[in-house]
Length: 68
Image 1: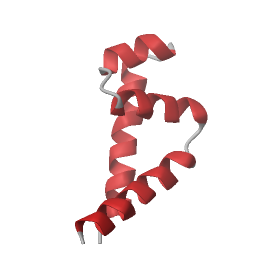
Image 2: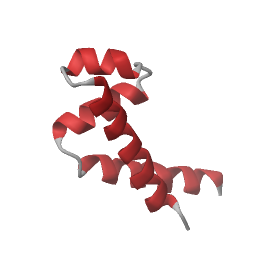
Image 3: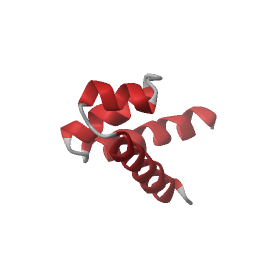
């Protein structure tokens, strides 16, 4: 069912995020809350490019985990 798929997706994402260092989790959480890359860089004191790379790596790794 859709609810089962949604629950499995949420669990996969939560497990992935739990394995990240706290600073990386903060970046991903801010992005999920709707902050822009520039806002995240300013809030976390990281370079814009560092935030972009971290978010891209996160997207790639999650996509790999979600492939059937």
